Length: 400
Image 1 (cartoon, helix red, strand yellow):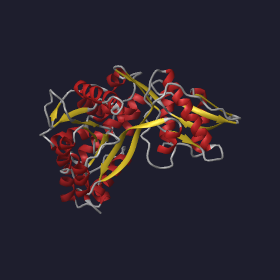
Image 2 (tube, rainbow, N blue to C red):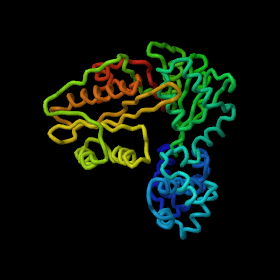
Image 3 (tube, one colour):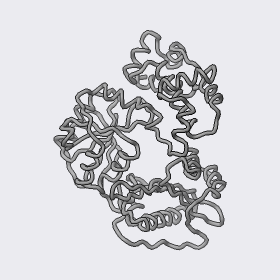
């Protein structure tokens, strides 16, 4: 088993035991490392010692509880292995510069942002690894996307704004012509997106990424672009690519189909029993139910507009589209569509797409991102095209 897999096992052990004050020995033993070797390898992969990472993980998760739950400071302190609320408060204040109670008051009623919670663990490590990258400004990055192709880069425009990403470039940070942006979701490895219109410029970043233990990044390319040198270098480095397509609805009207006994509507908090039953029947995962509940509580993605298809009073199809507005771009992310298997499955998917697109047009938002794959899933390209979406960008995810 490679070191990377062992490190991932160690991180999983830390994350699955937040109440325990784990020692270096216990983490190393669980991962299958010798003690002398383990600390150095863990630092090499994460930028932190195992004990430091465990402490930071506890604090970031406790911050999430402060923002998302009504637990007392004492309850949270005990949940994460602190002997008293006083010791928890000292550790929390040392990391976040404010006390747990002040933190809770500061973020009361605001949306949860993993960027706020994480302390930029993975981004700070990435930047230390590549000092040649120079920091630039989000506004300059947005200018690049708007002036080159706002349809192609619509997803990036939203993500850079909502996730408060960091922008780094190998070029001139004051005259941004190509760059990467990093998102931090409290992961060992940050999400890395390359924004580049020129193949030769992209090759410079590829040389940079090749230094990573496990190269992993994404980029959007024009649907009709041919980058022979870039693709050849990708193959030489042994990277594989998962392709998807960003789609938009190009028309200005849509006809929502009618099927006997089946209707679509926006969901409300009163529909939570039906949503939970949908999940129990295999329609979606726990995380989707939690995201919708948080949305209804007013503490999650305020742009989310959960939608459902009902047949005979039963929820058989669920979607979680979101509306975002950045500058003059109104982007309606149709996102994932979940459905129960059955005779009505295909009709429900088509009805949901049409219903979501109708709301997209009512909001005067022409973007309908789907990140569709070339498969037969509810987000497959064939289905997207059948409901009137067209390809605007090839979304490429590269990894070993």
